[in-house]
Image 1 (cartoon, rainbow, N blue to C red):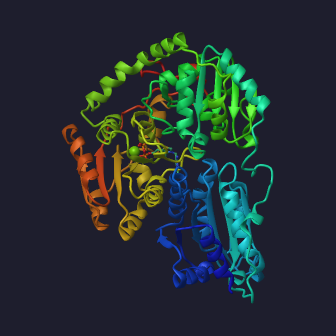
Image 2: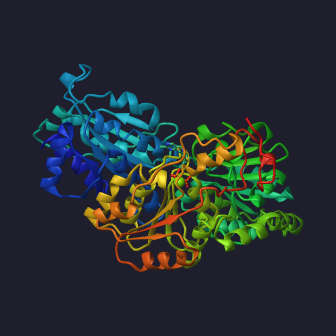
Image 3: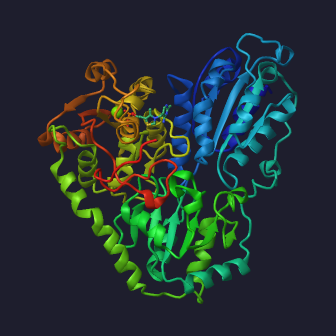
Length: 580
Ligand SMILES: Cc1ncc(C[n+]2csc(CCOP(=O)(O)OP(=O)(O)O)c2C)c(N)n1
Ligand SMILES: [Mg+2]
């Protein structure tokens, strides 16, 4: 048997269905064997970064299905592998399981600056959970199994296996069958089921029972541990309001009475004010990112903190805790839900106060959404997203890119379906949406998928229109074209005296571009056409693109200025913004 065959055998044993990638000299033997065996569907991206995001889409979307899978991408050495870097770094920041297999120059050429040689292990090491370079055919199968285990054990993340070409081509007589369970290293940090310390759970229950103003911060861990219904049951039973991090969104319906929507830099007024006024913060599967906490010295100064988190390295990293439980969120929520000593309290005063927070902006926001256009009559993204939400009843899958439109989606799409919101959060990688949506659609083919991008981000991975065309992927593309790198423009408006350095952009004829890929298209600049375009795209069988010409002057508020604390939140534009 050849090394190439053992790579494929291990992937097949792990249930891999799709491999995303791009070929080249150092990976050709594995591609050749893939073609002979056809064990998986191979999807050729148009750029390696696209392959990494497609693989992410598989992992992110399938985690809540009964067939959770780690996405796999495969590229050649040197430039092919280096083009993966951003997608891999992104997976690391967002705790997304991902396996990247890269071809490497033959062992005899390593460290000679051979053609298309890059130090892949060296580059990837700080970005991944683990990197491997098997140097003998005897290690290949076990390495792939171990790598796949590590991607999803405990907190998910990317793993790279860099395989020198001569190792791929090695042959051996007999195949010793690998026991996959023997390839599961029990290394701290990878441990997937730390058992819950019951004495800590008891302390947590005590804090919750005594709290007048508790607040749950729901993070990505609630999604990845499939704990949405447990969270909802607990919040309803014990009467605790829930605010969501960017990646916690879609853990439960966002219009549920206990939901406050997104928290943090672009969070809702009610979520942020509640965070400021809470006496107990129950943080579930989240890592106190600076976009959530604002200035750390001012964060939770009057609140006790319970932190439930699977990765021990996140505990007490940014925010000191009163009770830290290092365990799977779903397991902890299950135990809390069954704990007879946990008291259900009405907390009417707290909820009445939260209602006051809600009222602060709800009227003005509704008026702006309903108006639909800015002072110059140009479409507002918040109106378009609100209409998308209404027309899909909040039930569709949304894959957001990075920028203003992303924050608008997070604020105004009324997520009803568990795990239906995907975007790049930790890294904030523009261009993620189009390729990620391809992976998401392949993982959840029965659901409608909207890829929503700005004009900047869309052009960063626009080449993946080719992948959509070739594999006939039914993704609905919404392009929010405001002629600017809008999010940066917003900062320039607020904090740089309106000097628009490097943000205005001349846009191409997108209709002509997508026509080249055979994708039907509508361009909309009138309010009266907004709904019709969404309906047309939704009803169309196959990919469809709608370009909305949007108002570049739209400002997404509230906003906590970078470096500021939650109390510095800018709620309306009349608030005098701080200048640097
Ligand atoms: C790869 C990458 N480069 C730069 C940035 C910095 N950045 C964040 S948002 C943004 C503007 C995005 O513009 P666009 O895609 O048009 O979306 P909009 O904000 O206009 O909705 C930029 C440049 C980034 N996040 N990612
Ligand atoms: Mg833009």
